[in-house]
Length: 210
Image (cartoon, rainbow, N blue to C red; front, side, top):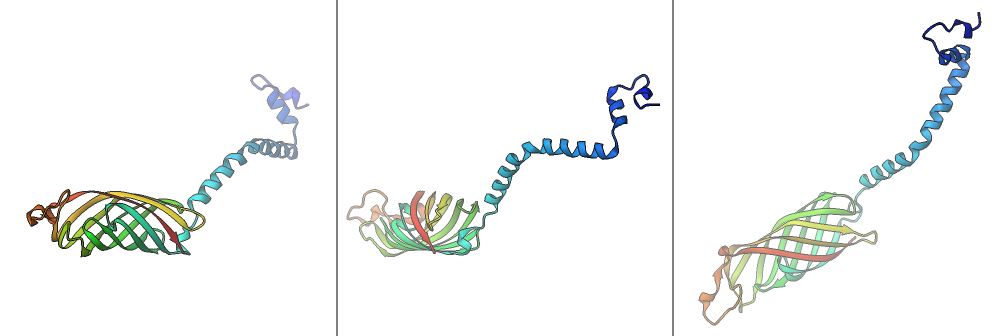
């Protein structure tokens, strides 16, 4: 009896069609349907592959771990303006040494930093110490020591090797001298022990990695 005649109650033309098809034809039809359905996939897949590649891009600092930079700021690790040298140890840790001048005088600084984010754009945070080696006697007595915290920082690394960064945080005196905040007269009592001083600090800079 023909396959169509075997379609009893409850079995529609769909089953009759399958009954007429040979296994080879079924496999061929399935392959065609899969090819048609997969035609819309490449656009999304390409985007996902590009995103994964961007995330996995190795940091350029692995091949160029040294940087020399110029910073300007307020009460920062290098005072109002200074230069820095940074050594990167892999992608997430670096140490910055700097020298600069602010209201308290000329100071040197050392700050370990933690880097979180992508290869080109990342957050940078650090905590370090600054020591006043040549105080400005109009504002400073002794050799104050400062605690500098770059609580929230950001850096963008260009393909040319240059980088732009900024950071905001806290500056606090640890001891070693006295400093006047606003106005200083002839009286030494206008200067306060730096251990009683704390406030915001900020800086921005440009560096070149090599």
